[in-house]
Image (cartoon, rainbow, N blue to C red):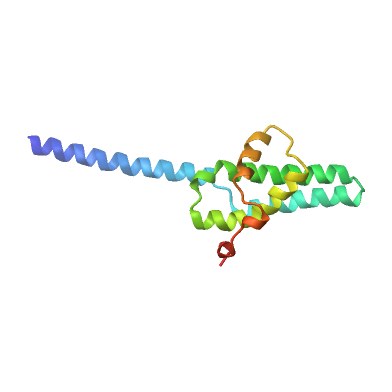
Length: 135
């Protein structure tokens, strides 16, 4: 009798785990953004900025580009704890330009404090080592 109950409990556990994995997989697929959608959004944002530049709305174009750059840096700041050392070195090599830009033109907006704190961890131009180059 005890073995029968144990077998029934194990079967229910396996069926429940399988159903849970199916449900979680479905939820993750719904949250996933396809690369084609990401590239299409990037192209649309580029087109908007180009339109502003061609219509001589330079200030609006600069604000548009700064907003997009700061959104990206804000996301990188949120994911910073997940980045391993090798990728951090490669990422920081690119972000040194963003840091230099914001040293001349301060961050504006609601994420300014988080972005500034994140960029403070990025080495300056002369602190990037040659072994940090992408391979």
